[in-house]
Image (cartoon, rainbow, N blue to C red; front, side, top):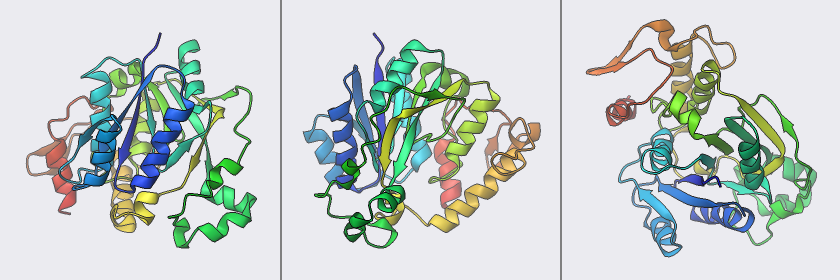
Length: 299
């Protein structure tokens, strides 16, 4: 029987994290374990709740960013343990019933290495059910969860439906077989603290021939960018612009219009003093990660 690790990166916003983990605990019937990364320095509230809830976790003393946190989950799943599958879920996401079970079922019965879920997000919900607008402020901020508006959506209850290939919803809700890590390796931490690391991982995986699909029936609700809009997750515009520029430089164009088949068109890239980025699609070495992150922190 397969073993699945469900990994989540947190950055404050404990009420959202509670809802995410509650949805895992209430909907997943197949063998699994939850593992969390506390990415916000000094977030003792989340750390205590995870500890009291007996949920395995690691705590970061500095904001090392989302890609670094994901790599900690990869290590927990596949270098420290031997899980068959890793499902990554965002901490502002609620899994609908049968979503994660369906991802696991398809992984068990098909050759797909990367299985994606399907999103239903806050803007769609408010368009369909405008009466809930009263519970949300600017940028869809929410502090009152008692209405549980996401439960109004019932179209998640669909027959199994597989389409593909597909590498969407990368870090909102998707499942990876161990072969993905063995072929592609880690997330690129140059995309600090977030933004475009998912595009980069998709491009690398597609170039390496990873097989993928999307399940239309594996649905999740997405509150949409709560780390940005309800937590101090970093300057959206500055980091988004910097990471977009780096992606274009790395791949010779924007996502979907890349000119290079390998990073930096086959030439190693000197990022900074004593930091050389090799021209390789695979990343299996974490030894430079902190130096790379500090370089981007100080830019």
